[in-house]
Amino acid sequence: MTNEASTLVVDARGMRCPWPALRLARAMREAADVLLIADDPQAGREVTAMAGEHGWSVETDSASAADEGRWRVRR
Image (tube, rainbow, N blue to C red; front, side):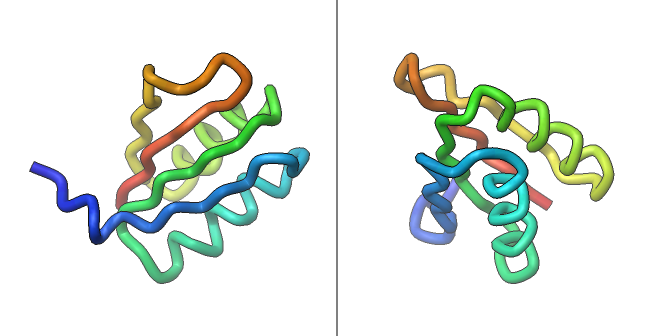
């Protein structure tokens, strides 16, 4: 079971790539569990690529609004 209190939320709505991925990378320096919220259509691809480079796991939140994405990234 995940402890929601230990999840760091990064709200990158309104930012264009590569900024959501860069904000994610910064957050992952300090946290092992990050929820990224972004509305750039390219963000999913950027997040997946960055996670692959660093060995992080990525889960897509299927309950996201149609105009935004949510990705849970963990070390």
